[in-house]
Length: 164
Image 1 (cartoon, rainbow, N blue to C red):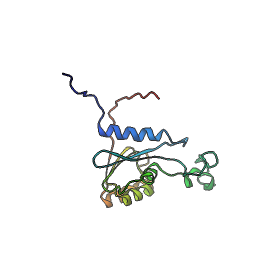
Image 2: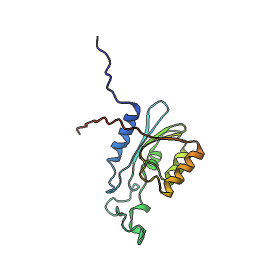
Image 3: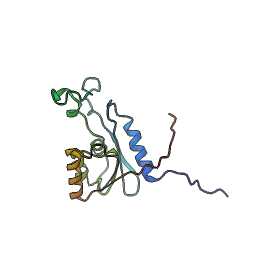
Image 4: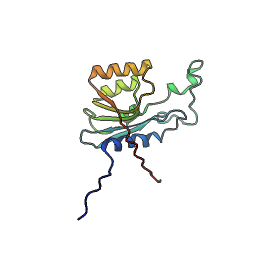
């Protein structure tokens, strides 16, 4: 009699892997972020990545950030939708109340507002490279006040090769 396979991936590896794969869809040349929203019973509800809204051409809107100070109209920041917000907006079901969000980069303050308003209760993030910025500091302040639990994903070091 065969035994079950023991080297299967954990739920956290699975959902963070989905978020990481979603990030590969982003056309942003400097930062690719992915998000995956999951129900309390570990079902994927929605996925998102950072990019421009529907109808805003990837070839006509600016991808650069070098003009953020001198000409913000010609920098990406006014136009990009973050992965977390895209995942929330992409959801076509009922409520996201009590769900979990896996995201490759800690959310900004604007995404934190959407996360809280959507009823997402747990946030698992891979990186927090902007932790010292006012945006992320404000994000954490709001998440704490709203009772949203967050923790950093613990990388296992497992390598998974996908041939497409």
